[in-house]
Length: 128
Image (tube, rainbow, N blue to C red; front, side, top):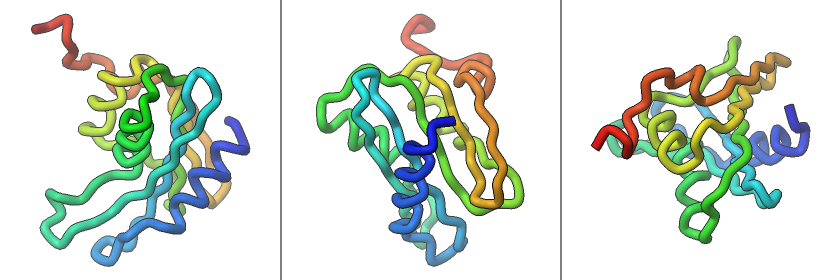
């Protein structure tokens, strides 16, 4: 797993707004040309309006014109690695395809997966 992406995701995690759960997440999404977009989770009291770190990073990248992606890394401080939620997996699939997903816990745990492993039966435009 790329140490630079881990560092950028960890730095983004420090900006997380998680007053309700206390669960801070950072993400760093790398484009095929090497640009990196970082994001953190931002909670809302209604929870349904909470936005995950992966989506913040993805939306920042898309809003800046990025369209081709290589990998994403997420960082937490959980006792085990934490994969993206289902909504994030679906959005990552639609906009990034079968990218590499790196999962890192500040407790020294790492895993890497292809997105297709984490979302084996995605809903996509070919089903429309």
